[in-house]
Image 1 (cartoon, rainbow, N blue to C red):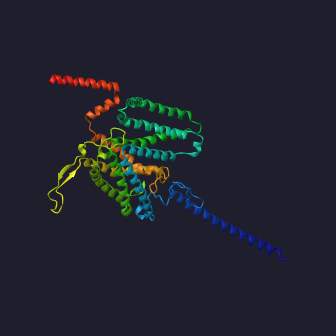
Image 2: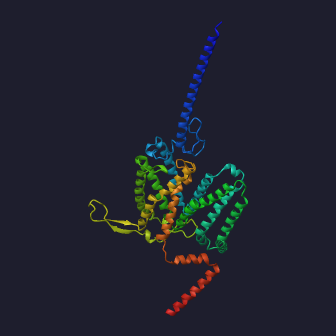
Image 3: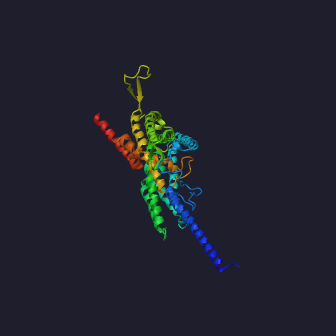
Length: 466
């Protein structure tokens, strides 16, 4: 039997060892906590709060989400296209989609004005759908049956108003030969504005009656968002419809310049891009921007000469038929001869060239398409960053959604319309303008009375001169 003192000493030594072990364990736990506290903020900062982070500090991405992981979307501009390891695979997918889009676009242009208009309407609907879904919340929508239908009601009311104003004269010219349809269309045009206003007021009352407690903020946010879509998307892209019926040329050239600028910027950035252009679009580079600008301006001058030689593209459409067009060329599309300077070498095969006057106007369109229109894409990039998404949709492989392809086109459409109305359309009163006003604003009986009175005036003048 051990002495009592020995037992006490052994017991104290064991207690001391336990205390040491507990302290070591405590220090290890403290070290682990400290390490996690250093790692987690860095991971969260890198993700900019846009991607969920697990307890282990790893980035977790929701299935089917458009959110951009930190290693893909770097706002500091270091992730350039020239340094992307998967750029050739993405380039093939993008090129395949581009070929299909360009082929379909050429086919629609060949079919004519009405088909181009239908294409624009379809594009607008796809864009509206993508943007409506951007702020949509499934939980709130379940409590508001029919609320999504209200958004589309407002959208199609705006479409009826804008296109009714733009195409009313062409519709009248289409049915002039039939008295019944002419009278019916005349009444529709006469009451067009009050009809659209009644539809909008119906939507307004519908919205007020649908308001629910605890959902006011969401509903008013959706109501404002719907009107923003109408202003930013629908109104801008609708400007180009007026230009289509003035001649497909004024739609085709601006749209083609945006496509060329986008493709050229991608190619130059793909092979030569080293200098970041803007933080909103990390893969945009100065090399791509400058190379695309030069390419676009040269293409504008060349394409204007090519497109300007086809009557199908230059003749205005005065009705809503699909027949072939023939017209006397506008002075802008009549070639003028320019002598080349004498300092050119003798082996140069041409001494003079032919240039269409419209080519000088095309340089202005090309300059805008290469310098200002890309800011529509920068705006869309900032917009997507605000909502922490990579693309507006996935309807076009390699390109994203329809809105991703139309951001620059919308800016260009407004400029093309304003430029055409300011510098191309004759501002003086012409015979065609007077006839258009007579057909649109006078009834059939008033037109016959005008014809009779004008005939009498001409007879009296002819008799007085004789």
